[in-house]
Length: 141
Image 1 (cartoon, rainbow, N blue to C red):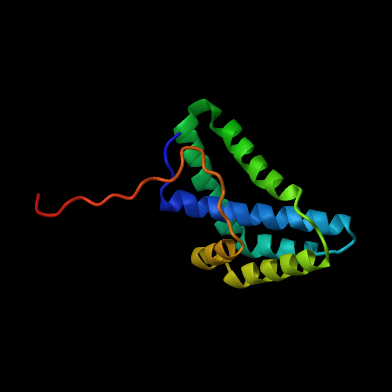
Image 2 (image 1 turned 30 degrees about the horizontal axis):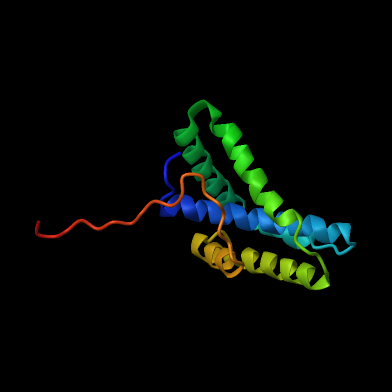
């Protein structure tokens, strides 16, 4: 698998944000706290950016795994979701989920604003192949 450049990492963080909010929404609904309207509004408002991010990730997996790219992409997104499945759920978590979803609605598809939200929530998805190393060419050599 190839390393992940800044665009790939950004796409993975947006997918991670979507997964985190989705799973928390399901956990909250299981407790009887309905945050689904906030989550659905987040998805509707940011649909294009979420789809674009998924396209970048799918292309990364296709390049890195060839014919197994879709399977590896599916595995990656499942791991993202599963990472949040066992987190504790209470009224405070549900309130924060609804608030973060509303913050993401206000981003209106702006990638940097969505990344800021993801980063504030501690988004660090595990990336097969890792992040690309940053190097600088020497000037004057």
